[in-house]
Structure formats: C-alpha cells, structure tokens
Image 1 (tube, rainbow, N blue to C red):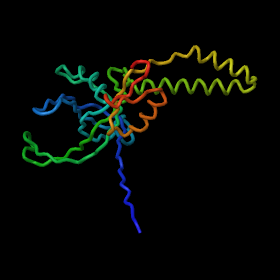
Image 2: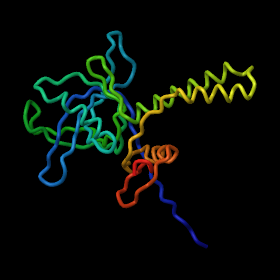
Image 3: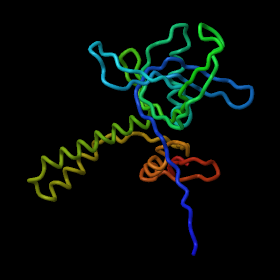
Image 4: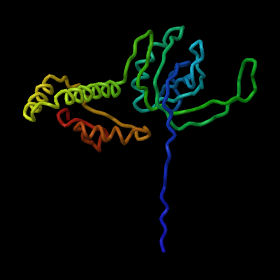
Length: 219
C-alpha cells in the first residue's frame, strides 16, 4: 500500500487602502537598493468625524509595485511629506520585534507588522488619482464589457444579421489600448496565475532565455 503526501501552500493576502507614513530607498552594503514604506492601513467604520481605525504596517516593495513606487518617490524628495493614499496588495505577514534606540521608550521592546508589498493599484495625492498600468487596462476592459452588455440588452428585438453588423461597427470604433511589448511577472505575486492567464489570452508568448512574456509582433 502506497501513500502520497500532498504539499499545500496557503497565501495570506492583504488588500486595503491606507496612507503612506514614511517612504524611503534602502541602499544595503550588499545587494540591490529597494524601496520600503510604512502604511497606516484603514479599517472599520468611520466615526462621526470621519475617522477610522488604523493599523500600521512596514512594507518592502517587490514585483509590480516597484514601478508605481518609482512614480511616488519624487513626492517625498522635499522636507515636508505629502498626504498620499494608496490601494495596495501585500502578503507574507510577519510580526517582528525591535528595540527602541532613542526617545522616551529607549531600550524597550516594540513590535511591527512586516509584509511584502506586491502591487499598488493606485495612489491619490492632491485630489488626483493615478492608476497602475494593469489597473488602467482593467478599467478599460470593464468599460468595454459594460458597453457591450448594454448594447446587447437594447438590441434584443433586432435580427441576427443586424446584430452582427452593429457589433462590427461598434468594434471598429473601439480604441484598443496599447499593450506593453514585454512583461515580467514575479512568482511571489499572489495574482501570478491570473496574470499569466491574462497575458496568454492577450497573445503574449514566453521567452525562456530572458524570462519574460513578449508580444510576437514586438519581438
């Protein structure tokens, strides 16, 4: 009688909205520089003054979030930190201890929530919202799907030939978003399989030597 042990792996993924408290570029003596931020993540119901509870998390930025972090970085070059809200996706949550080195709690033991931040879907500053490329394309695709569904519901009394003609006319006027020539995925991303499937559906192919997905017309 043979037995087989199935290995299972469970992701703990955090998706939320919060404010950036601290933004920094770390330059270790060994290894590549990397961004890290501290986020005051919002949760719970807002009170009468519009305030909500906050949980503070320290994030190392990896994967797709790096590109958005590079756009955010110039906002924190000055002496005063702006108010920046972000929608984020993170994982690998750990509770880590540290020792206060100065201040009233010097020498005491403290704790912090550490995560790897995989994705920044958008950030908002001065009333303006800036979306990541993936999120922008998702909105375009959603709008197109909504338009198609609305068109179908209003054309139920037309003949099949008329429906085909109408659809072709509509498609010819649709603005197709320009896709990037190359895309590199990070396997640690909790949405890795979904993005891989999306790339395949968009016509991307895998280049094993360069470890990237590419559009054949751009190769």
